[in-house]
Every structure is written in C-alpha cells, then in structure tokens.
Length: 60
Image (cartoon, rainbow, N blue to C red; front, side, top):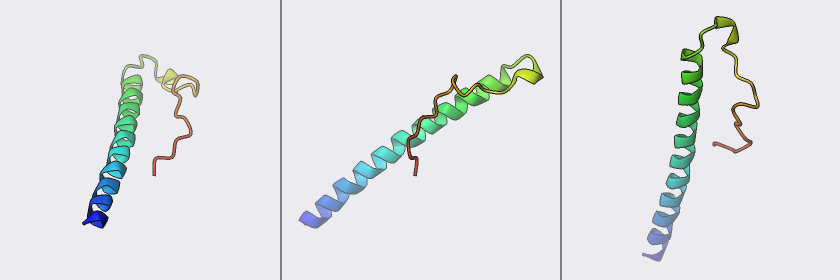
C-alpha cells in the first residue's frame, strides 16, 4: 500500500502542476485574443515582446 499511496501523491502533484501551467496558458491566450479583438487599427495588431512576458517556463 505504501507504493500505491506514493504513486497517488506523485500523480496528484504532477496533475496539479500541469493544471497550473494550463491555467496560465489559457490566461495568456485570453489576453492575446482580447488585444487582437480590441485593436482599432488593423496595422497595429502586433504585440510588443515586452508587453507580454512569456517567460522561459517549460510547459511540457
């Protein structure tokens, strides 16, 4: 049973980390979509790299 409990805790921990990463990605996608949809001038729909810090996190 120790193995199963350890495995369960490991899986739950990994799923929690994955959930946090997915939530962050969803938030960033929503931000980008809002910026694009709220752009008044079509020539200005690019994002400045400094405005959205994507960081260097590994999402896989």
